[in-house]
Length: 302
Image (tube, rainbow, N blue to C red):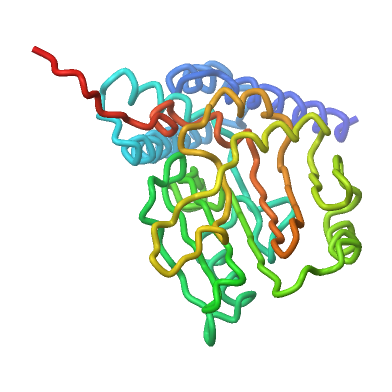
């Protein structure tokens, strides 16, 4: 009997806490906790301690979301800034998870991702890193790693995401793109076998040279918003460039494909092999400014 009562009490607490945390707005959540102290906690002191801790975390979360909004040159206290912060606050926590490219997973922190790529490309001897000079939107940071002969390149694309353990926003991997140039074309069957061994049976494929792993075959339409990026490096061959989300969006595409991720694309085109991974849901929480490319007008105004 006592065990059943304890189980019932724990279930009621979990249900009520979930209900409070689902409310939009910190003030609404605080009011819910206060109104349900007797259900959620053993005594009032415990309840108040939790509320104080929760308020502190939320304040730091608001500050962190503001930091991300400022990455896109949004001005504090403007409607666009406030909207970006509110949207950011509703974004789920992103931890390193899912499939990987050379060991790098979406949600991985910068230090660990950097270590894995440098190890995979043997960067101590024959590779280097190149910080992008391009318009990095919608990302907040990106890095291209490549071997000295430029035959192997990996692009890591980061977004600032909330990390409750660090009590702030941290740069987390939000996109991975890998390009390999072979001196002679590898057997397509062997490449496909290696990919299937790593990722499983493709959700969609085209002749064994183009493949995708996602929740649905219809997700391949996401490929239309992936473009080659110009890294503006004199020594970097244009034909070896990696692809990723276009700075132009459109952002609406990510709403369409929000349930697809994580998505892995792979292709073998002659001597060129490409792997690319992202989760479209992550881009739905970015401000419009993250995709809007400003264009100067030639019209003379008076």
